[in-house]
Image (tube, rainbow, N blue to C red; front, top):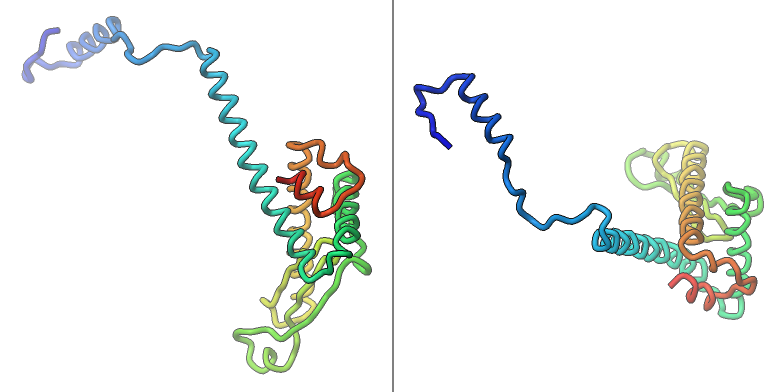
Length: 196
């Protein structure tokens, strides 16, 4: 290749040089592999499997946390009946494709005094709201407003969002581990075995 001194540079000479370089090209370097080779398919399959396992472990951990909170302080002899009711609700939600709950029976509201700014209202009125889904033990709170009704609606919407996410976790887990719902006899031990 000829090196052109600075004063001889022109648009035409630069274009000619670039075209010559483009035609010759380099050898490319590096290991050439077919796009769909056995090695790349194996690596891709392993990557997908690793991602699936990581996601399954994250979902399992979240579900286990909910179950642990649900069974906290419950005598061992009642664990199986609570788990059975919980799994019945999970199955029902998955089969219907939407959240299933009876607000009068499955939801419990409690009220407490807010903290933070708000003056006398905060000190004297129980405007903060805590709502619990009894079957799953999932709960939400709101104390952002001064009005109990506003906080009640906000807490309920937070709860619905958390319940929907929880059911989505179960749907994904069922997709990854289809055998999880085959056993009709569900206890804490069988859930531990299936989830882990």
